[in-house]
Length: 212
Image 1 (cartoon, one colour):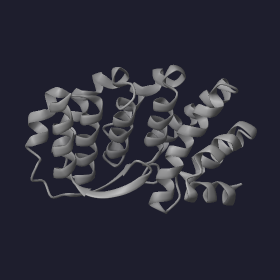
Image 2 (cartoon, helix red, strand yellow; image 1 turned 180 degrees about the horizontal axis):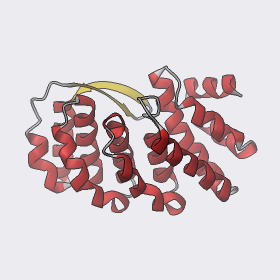
Image 3 (cartoon, helix red, strand yellow; image 1 turned 90 degrees about the horizontal axis):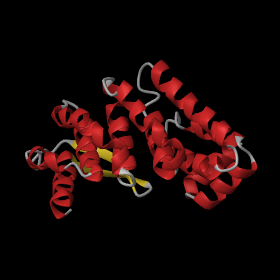
């Protein structure tokens, strides 16, 4: 199954992945393992794939899907080092795709926001949820704002993007202050990793908020 799942992730054949998950729930376990792949783009696709698959299966096997979500939260609490950095994005994708089932899990991610190696991924998760259901993560804004001052450009960039997605109008001034931040960031958007800068992400977020 590992080879088959990796092949699906490489092609981005999400319809096939969702069908496979409905036919065989073990696909969820394979996707969880794929979050730890050394290939960054493939691991990010595994995070998106998990969210898609668990949402597709939740209407059939809700308790099984809730169990797999609990496994992700256990992994977040047990991780050491950086190997589990894409667990939070997988949670975020799942909540975004099935908020009626998993929405209650959104704020649990705040419990690990103080872990530096998880901050970028948690910010991404909040932003992804916020792009669909900002009401579920609105109260995370005061916790995300300080991340704009992080020494890590990946954290600053992901935080900036997240604030724009959530609709945090109060962040506009802080985002504009980062307009000249040349820190390099890789961020997963629209199914692929994009290389950009903190400044560009912050400027785009500020513009989005001002247009809202």
